[in-house]
Length: 450
Image 1 (cartoon, rainbow, N blue to C red):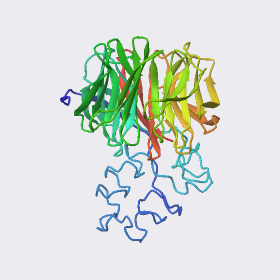
Image 2 (tube, rainbow, N blue to C red; image 1 turned 30 degrees about the horizontal axis):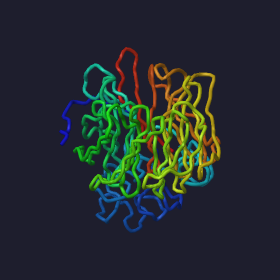
Image 3 (cartoon, rainbow, N blue to C red; image 1 turned 60 degrees about the horizontal axis):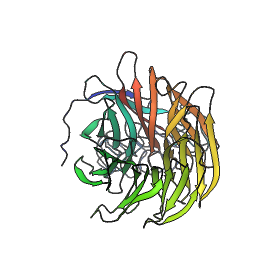
Image 4 (cartoon, rainbow, N blue to C red; image 1 turned 30 degrees about the vertical axis):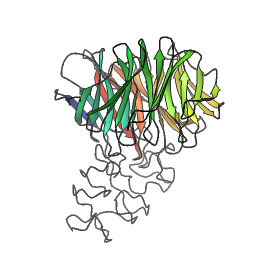
């Protein structure tokens, strides 16, 4: 059983501009939590938000009522604009199609992911960000993978001191909860299971490994690839909690599917040349994985039998796979020379479209999140190489077109975002690294509007 770390943390919090509470816009999602479409405090309705009136769900600050939108109640989706609560309350009149004071945009609705956020802010608008030094010692801390739990807590896979990895958990305000040693890895990979567990792929010594932790940071189970000179490069989980791992043994592919209850399932030491990863699982249970050597998107059923494949994927370094509820597969890749990145859509073993993001300056991306409306946010860097760059959030609609302007973030000498997770609470979380002049790299966690 892993011991939860008590190592010291240094954390710097930066909060974006908080928005005024919703008022009288007749929207059912008015942000007050009472659902009556009227202004919150003093509107006279049941559970009306009057301070201290004792009504259930009355909106008293910190009363802990689920979904009431109160500051400090810990509801990740309540929309009160407090750091960590996530989406920010819409200004008065947000969603009426008129640009009012406090609004950066108004597209006539309170729907996130459509180019104007649910609180009438532009996509990428800062909610809060933190810069974390894991152990107060000299050395770099880089966030490579992020997932968000149902309670809004944030799981991050962190490379520390360029030689080891830690799995860390933060609450919905970005405060550290726990940190444990993780697996060594050639390519960081992290997935959240439906039960809230965290699964990482990597290596134990020279042997590929998949390891699971529960939501409290306790080691749950570990499986090993039945071969030396192996590694796990990608992990995914299906709706039933089965975990899929993809990687390599020698110069060939490895694919495995595990039942977390008894770890009985199947594992393939494939004779086919080329490592496998990244990997994803569709709602129907089909497995989609990239074979990097041949730039091929391959599919397998839940028993490991091969299905349709797509050859000739665009890009050199395949970073992430995301699968939509309808089974469409999206692959993010970047070029070896850091000149561009590519997002592609594939259905039933055929390419539907690809979109290349290129610029006159070096740029790349490794994080992909699917937005509520079917579009995407991509996390990466621009204006330099990964060692001298500004962070980038790039936005695509469901057809691969431009959803919103790129967001370029220049906080310090180096800013890079490596991954992004989109939540059901009208916001997303990205992780990466932040390097101030003359300082070592800190883990960077940024929560922002979608």
